[in-house]
Length: 364
Image (cartoon, rainbow, N blue to C red; front, top):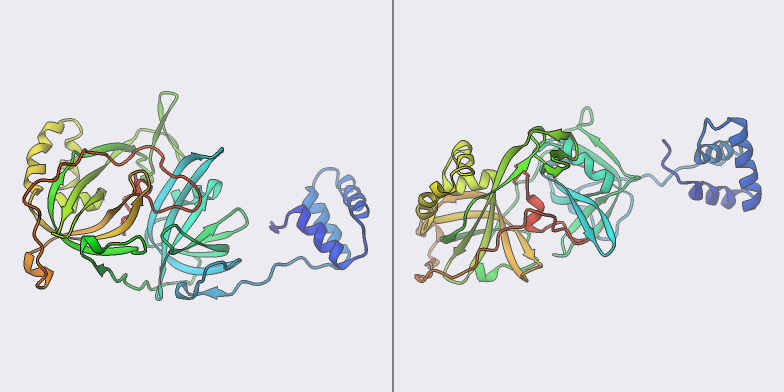
C-alpha cells in the first residue's frame, strides 16, 4: 500500500508535531477502535498523520543508467532488460535460512546483477529473458568479486514490462584472457583452449513450466513457484580446458552444453537412462579446440577460479592471433568433483557461484 512501517510513521509524526509516543499510541488505538479492526495499525497511524496534515513520502528516486550506479546508493530506480535469470535456491548459513536468486539486467550503458532475497526471489519464476523491468527502491552493494549488485527487498517495487518502455542492451564486451591471466575481478572472459578432460553429464529435475529446480518433498517433486509437478530434466557438464598457460574447470549448463558437445537436447537427455552411451561423445570432445565466452566464478570450497560457459564455438589455432595455444600432452589427473546439485549459497554477499546457475536455461 504505502510502504511505511508503523515505526517510520510514528517517527515522522513526532518530527513534525509535538506529540509524545504515548499520545500517538493513544490516538492510533482510538482509530483502531473507531474502525473496528478494519484497518491495520500502520493504516490507523497513516490516517492520523493525514488528519494532522503530515505528508508521508519518500525522497523521489531518479532513474539511473547502469553505468552511473555506484556503491552504497540507496533508493535506486533503474529501467533495464533482463539478460539472464538464475532461479531461486534455498540456503542455510550461520543460523539464517531462506532463498536467494538473481537476474542480469542490462541497458545501453552496461549490465548489472540484481539479487532477490526470500519472498522476493519468487518473482524470478515469472521473469523471462528479454523482459523489460523497472526497479524502484533497490540498493547497491559490492559483490565478492568487487562488481556492483542491486538488491531487492520487501519495500522495493518491481514492474515487469511497463507499458511504453523499451530498452536497448549494450552488447557485453568479453575480455580475451589466457587462462593464467584470469583474475577474481574479471566478470566475463573469452578463452581459446583445448579440451583435455570431460566428465559425465549430471542430470537434475526441473519444473516443466519455469525451468526452476524441482525438489523432492514427501514423495513428490515440488517447484517453489508452481507447487507439485511432474518434473522435466536438465543437465550440467564439467570439463577442463587448457591453453598452455594453465587449465581451468569450466561448467556447461543446458544450451552451452549442447554447443560444446555439438548435440541436440533430445540426444543428451537420452544419456540419463544409458550413461554408458555417453563415453564415445566424451572421447570425441577430447582434444577439440574451442572458443568459450564465460562468467568468472570463484569456487570457495576449493579456493579456485572456475568458468561458467555462456557461449561455445569450435575454433582454430590461428584464431588465437599468433598466440601459441598448445594443450598439455599429458592428461591432467583431476578427481571429478562435480558441481553441487544441492544448495551452495553461503550468504547475501555472493551470487556468483557455479551452483547458482543450476536449473537455468537463461545463459547469457
